[in-house]
Every structure is written in structure tokens, then in C-alpha cells.
Amino acid sequence: MRAFLVLFAALSLGACVAPTQSAAPSATPQNVPVSVARAIEVTRRMEPIAESMCRSRTPRQNCDFEFLVNRDPRAGVNAFQTLHPDTRRPVIILTVGLIRAVRNDHELAFVVGHEVAHHIAQHIAQQEAAARAGANIFGASVQQRGGSREEIIEAARAGALLGARQFSQSAELEADSLGTQITCRAGFDPLVGSRFFTTLPDPTAGILGTHPPNSARVATVQRAAQRC
Image (cartoon, rainbow, N blue to C red; front, side, top):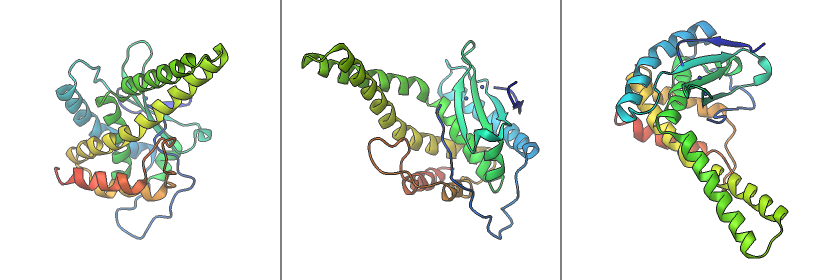
């Protein structure tokens, strides 16, 4: 049986966070352990802002968000956005490991805002298009050189992976920027929230990486926060 707890009302893009270990909380008043109950309150504050921004920016999308918690400890520290396969309703899934890893409400709100932003920016559809384009380009190139059916299929798979990953880096920064605005409008501090990056291992630079360097993400949040 699925170990999901419905938090508010919506369903989940790809894994956005997966720190190897949580950083020890520093001695500041903002570092308050976040429980599932507090996570519910955070999503309740974020939900109306997220839906309002979604409807104003992309009125033809389904903006009825649902927030779920995966309570299976084997799911690790993670958060992602997806769409319900039948209704196309946007779903944000947080693992209980993530809820325990964040150090305050601001960090959790920032993660939620980031995932919501993926849906508003329609990143799932764009990532699928980037993967198709990469597959077509790589597959056609091998075909023109007289490659075998197996070689064409393998090239198409590699092209799809590369296309999706290259798009993913730009999408993460866009989601950080838009997520900062959502977090701010909901009454949380995105600058405090973005300190969650300090608990994440810095992604390896290169075209095969799915996430940009943490320094680039922090700089994006700082610029976006100036518009709050």
C-alpha cells in the first residue's frame, strides 16, 4: 500500500533534492525542526499563492495543486513535481526524509515553491520536447552515416538523455527564480529558504549534469528576491 499522506489538495518533474546528509542546524532562532504537521501548515500557506500565480500566468493549465507526503523512509530526501496520468492535475510530492532534513519553515516553503514553479513553467512538457529533439538529431545523424537499427536506437536514447539533461539545468534555475517569488508572496523568506542548498552536494559541472552549481542557484535566488 502506498505510504502517502494527503497534505492539502493537488499530484508531482524529476528529483530536485537529494542531499547525502543533512547539515547540522546552526544556533539561530530560525532553525526549528519541521514535522509533517508543520509541513501541512506550510503547504496550506503556499497553496493559494501557487494557484493564483499559476492561473494568472498559465490560465489554460490545471492549477489545482495537490500536495502529498511519501512516508516511506526508503524514499530518501527528495521532492518532485508530476502530473496525474488521468486528470493532468499537478502533484507535489515531498518525502518524509525531506521534511526531516529541512531546518525551518522557510527552507521547506522554498522547496515547495521551487516544485510548484516547475508546473507553472510547464517544464515537464518542455523536457519531453527537448528529449524528443535530442533523440531525433542523434538518431538521424547515425542513420545518415549508414548505422544499423541497433546503433540508431542507441544513438536516439543517448540524444534523448542529453537533451533532457541540458534542459533540466536551465529549468532548475527558472524554477528557483519563480519559486522565490512564490515563497516571498506566501510570507516566507526565500533567502533563508535557499540556505537549504548548503545541505546539498554541489553538482558536478558539465553537460551531463541535471542540476546547475549551487552557487549559480543561490545567485539566482538573490536576484529574484530583489523583486519581492
